[in-house]
Length: 105
Image 1 (cartoon, helix red, strand yellow):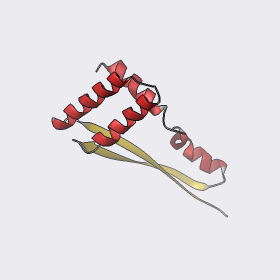
Image 2 (tube, one colour):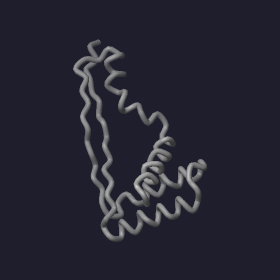
Image 3 (spheres, helix red, strand yellow):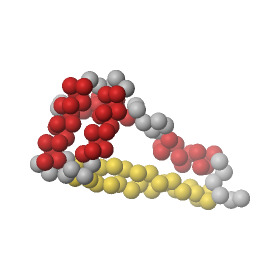
Image 4 (spheres, helix red, strand yellow):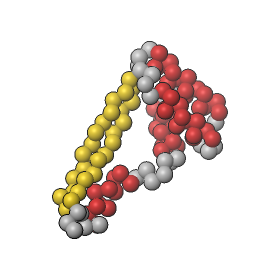
């Protein structure tokens, strides 16, 4: 799959996530709410092989069910990911932001 097509697919699926930008705003939200000593840490999960194949397929199925991608496109993408998993070439880095702060009250 060409690079631009992958980028478009990712953006299409990301649009299906409710409040997907809230993690980027979490520090500011805590500061605005009066928290002190606010910090943000990132924890990145690395997944290879077939471990995340089912959740990835679920993302593209959700995109298809909302009309964001065609059935043919979803099937082709899932087949590509399955082939990567079978060849131990599937790689997913999943960053999780953890925001903490102290409530002064």
